[in-house]
View (tube, protein in one colour):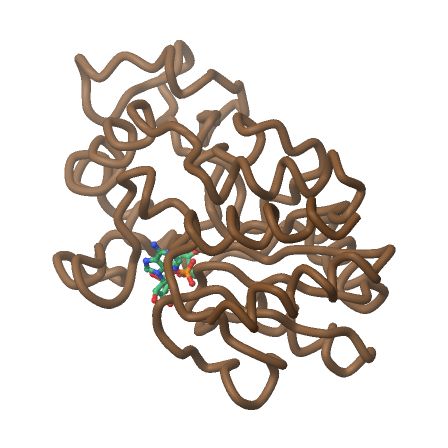
Length: 248
Ligand code: OAD
């Protein structure tokens, strides 16, 4: 383990262009549950019944009641953990330029990272499905479910539901960055949802080192990633940053 931490620090010390792809696992230590695996959200509810855009259109009240209200509570309380702060520190050290995140919780920005591509959108805003008016999620009243805009339309989070496209500008920019970086840090993602899971593949094909941080092996381990640092995001990221600071 110590060897791999040191190896990651050396890889980062040598690299000029570094990107990160993060997933739900990076926010687990901020008390936001992941989707898959032990304690995962999709163990409790069926994503096709609650997280597909057709399900939302059919019955927005049901999706608000079961999924979105709970997400709001959890995200409202969440604060960045050592992994989010570690990535912000890597940016300060000029060893990380862009984070591509599948998360919608805004914790990278709260930790101080300045270039965050929100691949699956953001939970910070709601948008009226009828007139497109936007409202910060913190200002949405839950007295009525689903919450309605003044025009009578239903508010939806600005997240990507299953069955929806990734915002084209986010997809294009992520692909551009993934194919030009020298190191791609992949933290806390099962790498099972396309097209996000293709981002590290693109980096690998373009000659980058792909470093994974995850307590478990993933779909990338042993094929796409050069090595897996097996552990929790907070502790592993802090240790890598501490080693890097000794090196540079
Ligand atoms: P998943 O829930 O699929 O995977 C979470 C990953 O985090 C797993 O590989 C865990 O082993 C790992 N993990 C758990 N605890 C960790 C910790 N403390 N530190 C580091 N890693 C940890 O989450 P994603 O890969 O992000 O999409 O899921 C991708 C997409 O699937 C989500 O963005 C969401 C979901 O359906 C949409 O809703 C469109």
